Length: 301
Image (cartoon, rainbow, N blue to C red):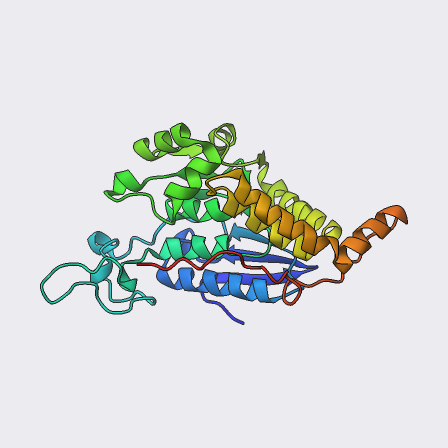
């Protein structure tokens, strides 16, 4: 499928999604939001995709929201070109229906879709990543950065607030104090500070970034069972909000019970004993355990 604002390339079981508006420093639009959601839908449905890398075309990762609409950039009700716009939340008496679909933040739609993903997601941050350019990364699993990357939670400097579910993701990744410092100041900071603050795992020279991301994706694709990875991803993310370790024990127990009887588990043990590479037969598309998903879908209301 051809996309307008992103590239979608699968090679050797690794999907690379490239934000592709280089003339605008890959600035985020409503169209890009919809295309990213569709790309992750396609990735989850494709058993040939074992890992996902997200990066940017040209010298930026994503410079934030496209500000070409000027003063009404963030005034959703006045934007006529939102591809996801579904009427107005303004009611006859002038009050706002806050549960109306048109109130929803497009960046949040993207991060919620990434959160639901069944494949591991690696961000390869090749350049400036500001606003939604950094908050979209928070739902990704591992963030690697080029020395040329810059990050900024600039929302308070634009008169708005952090979006894309970042008030949930960011403090879980870097801690409350660090999250608030970056959000309060709204300053743009270098990759080394992102590394020291725990936002990224490692910083690379520009020409080493994508090879490092691919090597990590390759290690996952070559050595692990896809269903086990899909379950593990959801266990880790969803237990970040659990109110007691018993919730983890319930799902760990069910997952181990189901996986222990699977053909993947047999192959994992025998390949180890026979000192050969494993060939895991189970597929994410059809072999997830019967209790999956174990959560009720959250509605916007």
